[in-house]
Image (cartoon, rainbow, N blue to C red; front, side, top):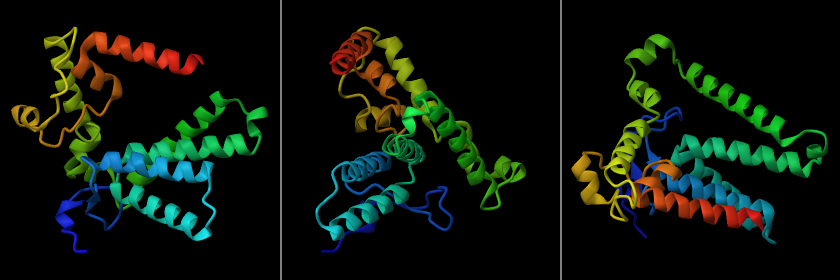
Length: 212
């Protein structure tokens, strides 16, 4: 079956994988969604392994490859944190190492990861000042601009939000951000779409979910 590469890949992407200038988003609306789905698939396999070794290897291989090619830094951090939590729990270290310390260690490792990525591949402060990644670094890959739009819409529609049509194609055209498929922040997504009453409803749902 022939698949048009432009239908599943974003070309000329300035990511953090050396020599890889594409970003895989498959059938999802955004590559970040592929990253999250890949982690979910891998975690499900870790929790309930397939009976077939071949299936296990395929899931880990394709899931890991999709996670890498999605080039979602948030998903990478989530994968590291999830792996550490699973290792922490399965090794019984949790009896000696509180979760708060694990979070601290994870944050420290994440900071080292970012430092390693910046120091690798011939990055330095002079290069960053003129590099195309400069805007991405200081705007969190464009998220700060999207967050500003979400907050503006909250101010305009404080109680009930903009509605489900926010971040659709027409809205993205109106703000000149065709890449903004969502708010890139769950709280701001809820506030921009459903307003303060939506956030209250979401808070009640989370409370009920975790109170049982």
